[in-house]
Length: 565
Image (cartoon, rainbow, N blue to C red; front, side, top):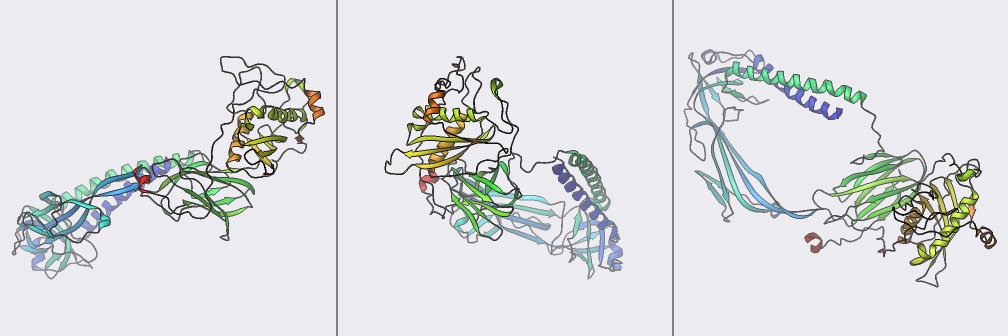
């Protein structure tokens, strides 16, 4: 807020400063009577600047405005083309209207000024700034007859060749302005050959307000600009000083061009086929998950994620589905990297594609151990006891036939290792039911984002945020790309342990202690109590996942159907 206010204040101060220099220029130029200049056409100014004012005398050679044939001192005619064209954006294809200037025709005359002491000639054939131009003609002509010229009043305009990329022409319009031969005029220019003309280094200044009236108007504008701009700038300073320091990694509506370590989800736009590039500085080496999320649009982005190190070596080149997500886990050392997001099919729409980006650090910081329930002894530095982890693995295997194992894969959960109360690694064997000949895969998955390993059985069962939901989500994500996988066990306190699944003998001993997994209940009901474990999660919804595109740039699959949609 403070920065924006400062920019506005500086802009207003800049306008006031321009008015100040304009007034200074008028005061610095010699000001003489018209007769004195005519008798002695010499300026004391090193550059020949001179100013005067007087009654306008008609030009010896009459100047007529092109469209209306009005006698004038100067004129300006602007001819514009009106067009329509089709634009394709990520929100679909639409027709837009616009105008472009084809030509601006200007003309000026040589006229006289006389304050009663004698006339001096004023030459505006090379242009001048007027504040008393009047609009004499304005007309729109709809359609395009195909003729090579158009008539606007008495003005004939030859139509130039128009590129097809500029859209189709729906009409033309012309606007004529002119300076009438009347009244008094103040003129500031260069004294050259007994005439006042346009200086070579700046514009020629004229005003129907007169010298004093123009100076008064400039002083008023300067005063309000300096006051308004100064107040805005002063208010901006404390806002900038005392404003809370911005967190570069906070959730925001845009992604900074320079990123450091992890970055919460942010939004950006890619408007070039070469991609939107970011400088990523890693100060904490380890594993990171890079994700680019393309929103579903009428014409959606096919996201491609490319990561290069400081030497330009490509570390990641992954492509996601149209309007989908591309994610990649990468292990990096401390250093600087270039991260680029680009359209994988090299197809670009006007205005570009929007996307979200997120960088997650997969390193787990140790947290204080959670207290054991029911007075059980808590091992120093360990998030959960051996018994608790053993029971949780057993409960996963018991509920699997009715939940996780109903789809393509049959799971046998082996062990669970937790670094803290909400970060664990689950090891299991997965057997592909659709391909009996295929060997079982040994997999390790990180389970995170849950509130606790078990819920309080005295409260209603809540699936959202539970360990069961976290396991379900992790398995569904793995099933999109089912491969054998091992991950680095999260950093745990020195005494953290990995607990293996119980043996058959152990199961018999604990059969009495472990209650069957109850089904989820509604909020209005009371979940059945169990001594150790919570209710089973909702069955995992199995989805058919299309094969992920390869990293190489795919050919464009944009069709006319895409555009119509």
